[in-house]
Image (cartoon, rainbow, N blue to C red):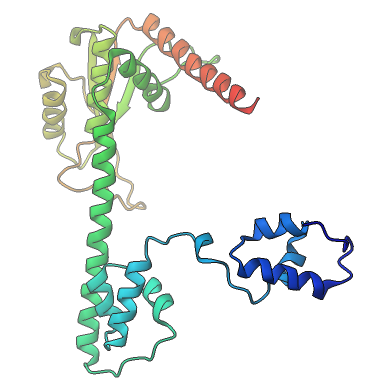
Length: 290
């Protein structure tokens, strides 16, 4: 439907047409194309006060919760009670029921505080369940890793955490240090994929002088499946009284340093593979942009 009002001089006539189209169930885009009105501000003015047809409204996953929250509010429930019942946030409840009358207070401040605390605990529990569910799903999605996948992941891990060669200080050898037992386990698996025997490894614990060194060495030796007697003398960190240490719990085992003897060629393979990963990522990014 073309119209002669290219400059929108006869606004009221155009608005009548827009309103009529709206009431027949047309969307904003359909009205825009019918009337050739491509200015959003003008289109908004033409349709001002006219609600959109039901079919254009997007379904809201929280509609059912909203309706239930309103029902409970009308029954005199407080925000805390509704939160415990429905497991949704107070901010959402407030938004949904703010036009409804406030229920008469029927409990003491202590009782209200206890309900609020239970509501917050329920929220924290729901968040923790969601957190664990997401982690578990991601864990299952990984599945079994091939040796190639372990190799590439190990290369990225080493480049982030291992000692690296510098032009001003040639250190072409594998030296890795970390305090996370799972990281150490994966690094040892990576060395297995590379064909490195345990006899080529040297271990050293780096730990604060106030910690139990023998216990820490026993822990790391068991994890690496070697004898504690094979460990080199531990590196002890002096305590600085001006700092507040956080790692003082019983689970503190310091860091384990792993040296790989005769590993210059392995280091070069690792570094070359890392830059291969970087180059491949850049190429993929370039292809996505063109």
